[in-house]
Image 1: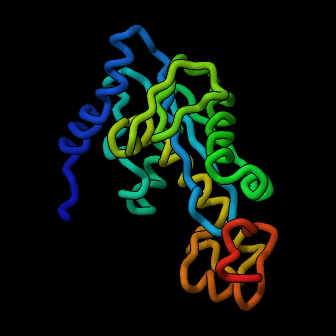
Image 2: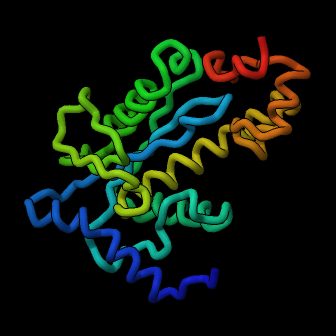
Length: 214
């Protein structure tokens, strides 16, 4: 697939701002996109990002998209630009013990709530990828596949992904046998083989690994 030109990236950014523009027309200014990363891995926390982007058209961040569509190098560069230009950004983290206790969906919602509550300034309204946060008393719009449709949710997906990936790389130094630097806790063949050989470490989700270890 050919690389997009700068003009194409700017056009895409504006197209992905339609949900934000609708909310601004309703009178909202501090619009936070919210997304998670880490629902599927066998190991590591679930994290959520929350990002309030500026409405100023001169502060466009060309190339913002669903984090899964971006190369690691491009995602890292966009993360730095988001941190520089965003009105506010935050990450919420929920650990493995909580995931095993309450289930991954509830843990995901907890991580999103933590990210939203950590924003300074606080958001006035939320755009969330796929779920609704009953525990957050803010107006919110749930958008299916929102990380590819809303620029704010896409930015949140980048923030969450980069933060979690860095954390897993740090954990690789402590538990090198599992290959966390490369697999980020997901169930790669190498990770599963190591899990069977060495057994689980404290980062493994006991409710996720029953198919691989007793």
